[in-house]
Length: 218
Image (cartoon, rainbow, N blue to C red):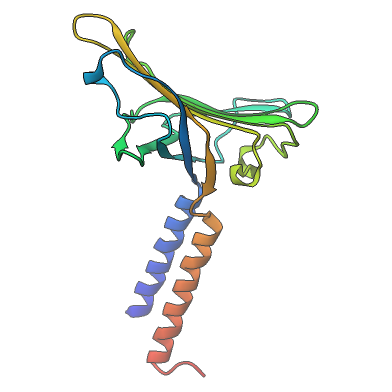
């Protein structure tokens, strides 16, 4: 009975690994360079120039491009690619929307120089909008514009800018706008290949332990 259960567990593990491997996740950090604060301190967001901010960029590398001529491609997203924005200096978690309209884009000019851009935006009605964007550019060679073969953390980007903006209506009329931009550092975590190897190694050790227990190892 234990062997069928073990086979089922391995099958479930492999299925989970495959699902997770479809998503690429990067942990990013930056220091706030500029801010556009609020004229209403009671409604303001608690961030300042010099604060350390972290966020996550996650996307499915297999999403099809809406246009690709060999040097430019846009990949539409139906869910936020940028999430979990936290000011590590103050502990503040920034406002996020679970529904968004956004895209990722990769472009490369004739000299090989290129950009990677992410835009998330949410606009339910005229007097409100929320958005995040990440813009990376390089003066050197951009190896590909195919998202499935693109690794952000392997490129020495010349310019790295992450922006956040939040605009909403004030009781009595008017709007308040908050925004900041940061420089960004990039680390992929976890790497899908490493996660798969770890789980397969753990499964092999489990099988070996069971076989030894029943005296079946020669």
